[in-house]
Picture 1 (cartoon, rainbow, N blue to C red):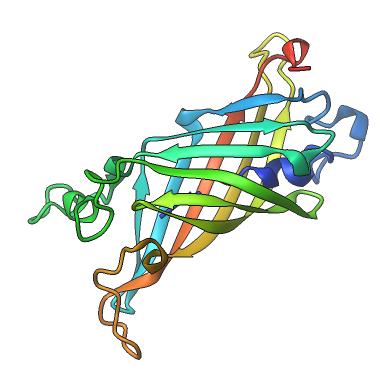
Picture 2: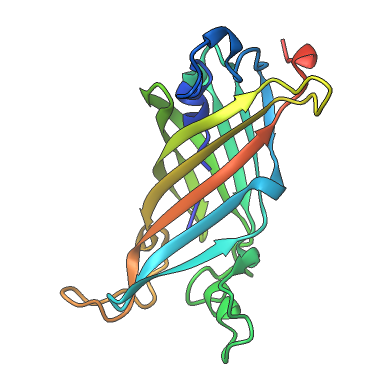
Length: 222
């Protein structure tokens, strides 16, 4: 389930281009974005995942406690780095009062085993620009005590260096989506037998919607 972070894409192409509706590049909202470490704006961040259930639906849940830091120089977006952490104990299914407690079941030993493995972590290793506002982000994901490479596709949604008369901090945002096999991380409970769909799928799709906040342009890291 993870990490929906992620961010190299947004910067990847987005930092160097105006939004589709902009015609004057000098007035692009990304103009003047400082090179700096950007931190996740947690009130505008979501990480959800979905997995096949019995071949009937893709069950969807989320994590509510996550953090991330993106270090980016808009002049060299492919060199950006992203680190992120997720608390698996923050998993929510919308059914904590079910019998048994469904949140606790997925957090428990059969799946995430969050008591034993209390952190999910991601560190980027490569950013490949794939378009003017898209990128392929690859990194090492620590999940369930196992570290394996995971990739995701990210889209830069926009950004600005600060608002005159308003919040002075730079802000950037993006969407990202990827997949992983939970069996690669030792989470094998309920995977359907070959040729059947009677169980919970091995492939997990994760989705991220995030915003990052940086310093005012005048305080950009040198």
